[in-house]
Length: 614
Ligand code: ADP
Ligand code: MG
Image (cartoon, rainbow, N blue to C red; front, side, top):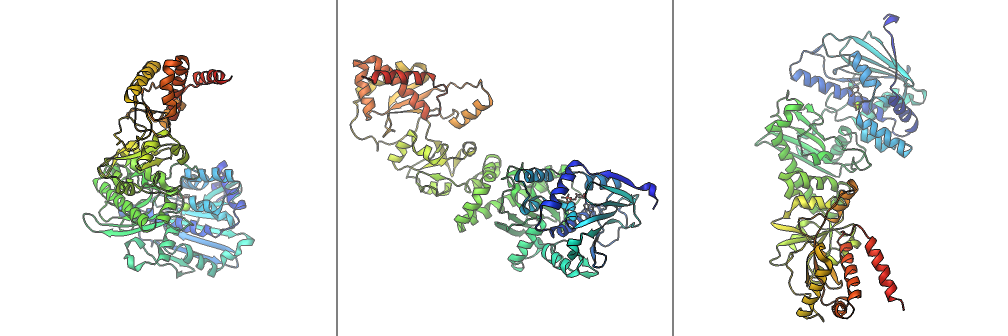
């Protein structure tokens, strides 16, 4: 090796930041570095296997796909080598000197916000290769690319400011990493220590791992095994290894089908929502294999988008190995697989929800947005997904939830609609005048209080053949049950209505005496194709000039004292009656979320108060 081939490079600023974090602020779990390096080796050999399977010419085609680890206690070094795709000079610079990963960026951002990165976060993103510098103060990476004309190179760094690249005398295809361990971490040069780590973290790597010449791991594609032959412990270890997870999965689904396609699938619902901490949309977490050969670790378009939180492996012998990312999206075969998996996942969740509602509730609290996204976007699975929704209703106790299946089962004979109201909270909904008529009749009303619910219920439209109907809407056909007590006569009511109609002018479509109300004097009903208060608020937030002239139907309560007094006042004290009417309309519009400008209301209110003073 001549001196002239030595190239010095500085780390990209973000790498520097990452290295500082990894080396200095993470005291626990330093041992995960080994898992990271082994999974990189395994990834590199998966890629090689794929190249070979798609008949690319590779350098040293018959080199066995194995990982070899050697320890040198005296020299305090640990060496890992694989026969994967290796790296070219450009790839060394690109992969080990710059951050391209959005996940790593999110990790840095979150670590910054939280002051320190909890170990959980490493699991979530994998800080990858750089974790080697937690335990080593010098790392040499010998690399020889799979490409026939590749060069043998050595990348070296102390993990501080930069790295060097020079020629290497190791010309074997793949990567060999030599770590000079820090004094404090010399334990990782001990064979028994490394052995226990491999057994703990890397038992399911799909390639043989040798430690100082002895075979350590069982090579198992767990998803191809029979369910009965896999223990809970094995599932958990597989989940944690394959997905870099520290938690235990909440649910798992392991199944095989032969017809119409051959599919082996092992899927997990994680414990934590990867998008919950304000990280952007996560990548799909289900890898696609063909007979144990990885086709794509994040296949876009395999599963419906909302299922991206699920992690797992789908293996189908029917998929052509050389399918490209582009053609995968249009492949009827891939669509078919996705559809089968999607249905199974939903069925599994429904079963689990029935078997243990409390557990499902905890899961739902973290993952409901994915399910709701599914209802709104995954048309073929919409009805099945709707069964997974949970919410409170006028018949559930405060804090308890139920599903659409429960509500449908409680419908009265002949009831053709499922009623709901969208609002900010249970309290807000329960104090709304809209609920009165339904409460009085014992009719169940679903409380939708999540910001996206309205959108979800709109796209759902109906459930089990029953229309989903907002109780804010006009035109609901209710029976007479609640219309009791002293009331204005039909004639008096009619006269008052026409007085009010003149007062309200074209702000309303009609004024009528109704039987909906019990405790409130007046209610404004909106057309069923109109915007909801939540939607209007959003439109207004986006566009300050947004105008939406809603005409409401007014119902008055002929049994309410205020309405009865108003009927008299309109003849005896018309000025006061006019002011009261205006105020009543505003009150109804406030309850309907439709009063945009309260200036007139306040003025009138002041005038009314003045009148009341002696
Ligand atoms: P990640 O594995 O999440 O991509 P890493 O920091 O672990 O991130 O590795 C960065 C990149 O370096 C990998 O994506 C890969 O391209 C390359 N790399 C790391 N180890 C190897 C290896 N043993 N063989 C080939 N390429 C590797
Ligand atoms: Mg990695």
